[in-house]
Amino acid sequence: MDIAGWLDDFLVRAVLAGLMVAVVAGPLGAFVVWRRMAYFGDTVSHSALLGVALGFLLGLNLNLMVTLVCIAIAVLLVILQRYQELGSDTLLGILAHSALSLGIVAVAFVEGLRVDLMAYLFGDILAVGRDDLLAIALGGLIALVLLIALWRPLLALTVHEELARVEGVRALPVRLGMMLLIALVIAAAMQVVGVLLITALMIIPAATSRRFARTPEQMAILAGVLGMLAVGAGIAGSFQWDTPTGPSIVVAALLGFILVQLLPARLLPRFGTR
Image 1: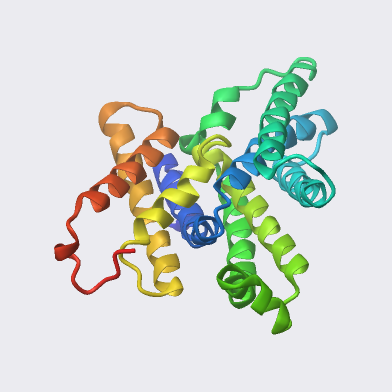
Image 2: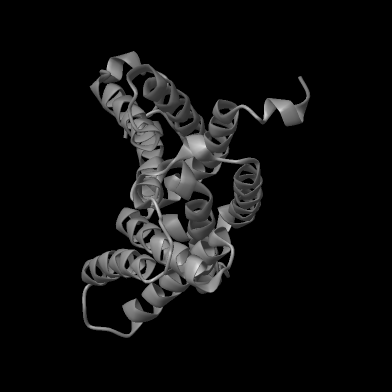
């Protein structure tokens, strides 16, 4: 069978889409865990639905609009955190739920449009088409290249921000680069696990890999591998028990995390157990 015919199989497309997202989401999730940015990731991901609504209203590409809205929300967060009196967690809560609600309300104003919001909220990986697969591959590749380019300065800022500044690391551009990364991954992963679950796909494999890894690079690579395993197990479980595929992927990742936490330290003699 040629490649074109092979890609006609919806299950093949679903698996490929999930694996490509996991390869990028895992390493990026390592930084989200290290920098304690899980709630930030939630806020940006919730704003993706607003991007979907604006894409329908303006007749523009949905992935492009999701990426632009996610970047705009991320930049707005940085600005508000520097010039406001509210705590960061309060700001994140306001923006996260406001963006999600605005997106749902905006969709209702598109005349004649019937949108399956569940597919955007929790993903519809089995409906991934060839064009979607290409968009996921392109977004994932850009995000992966950008992550590799920003790896050292991001790691330096994570370990010791003041020392990194002294050594010449420009904090603001690096932070904006990470926000762009998160926006690209969210846009790519929206159809895989949905806007409400993408943060889980980033942080759970990364948190799971933390117990095994001795170096940041090991943790990032292992997080990607564990994310891919969760995708495979989630899709298989979805077919076996007829469960929603996106949530099934997250549940598979969660089960892996729980299993690793239950392993006694003596069974992991060669690895760190931090």
